[in-house]
Image (cartoon, rainbow, N blue to C red):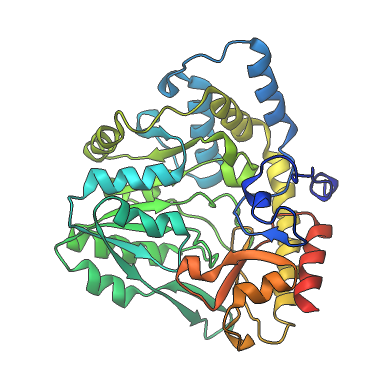
Length: 383
């Protein structure tokens, strides 16, 4: 099935956010976290069927039993998580969702803990809601047995900062964006202990949870953990995995009734319903695209390994192999240049600027693309 991912439609004249940035230049866009892949055919058929019906009027997401059943089925099958349908709150993206969480669980002047580095909209959320952001850094740990290094949270910093009574919310990415680590059960238990001890609510952005590339790793949803279920909001979507981010459809899973009511109240009158087309696409993705999903993972694993080998062969660049996502976090501090983004763009590649993640000597490469496009990106960076 690799041909599905080798043949990607051109996006140069489609008003693509990713491609517009470098329009008219000889710079390959490798930044925004969507893929170049054509959507799975059942998704396209579902969208076509919705359009051919001819009426795109209001649909309350809570009434769309097909999409609800699809989410329940997917979480049960892929993540061993048995959710109740009433735990589900539909949102038009995880970015609106974690901003709603800021409004729901904090008062002006409160503090929000943010795992860093992180993607720009998440870093911006506290200030947008009149809150103070407290960064919890990421550290590199090395397994003494395998000698493999990976990124993880600075748990000492988390413990120290969470003790501040003004800290009310911790927003986390798992799998982490941009570093690509998948948190272990032991790490989630430690987060749970810290949050419970200091009365901090966890909002876990898990939008990349279905893109686990390390076959020895398993994603554990925050809300599935017994010691987090009543103190967490888990954010998910089909958007990254199935490349339907432009349809603006995601969901929060909130088992605790009071937290769920606070969340829906904070969103009321501000956050719009998700679209009928997005619901149809999500239903198709989570019920008819399992084979496509597995083929995508196999394709991305090869892409990841190509990026890992190529980047680490370029003087001045290095990276750790990510457990998940289609994103590579590249350390360019060894280049010895003032502006690593300008260095990459002069080579003809447009990554996500590390400065946007508050790590100016890094950049992020999106390898969710055809092998041909990826080879050109890596060739340009090496020349």
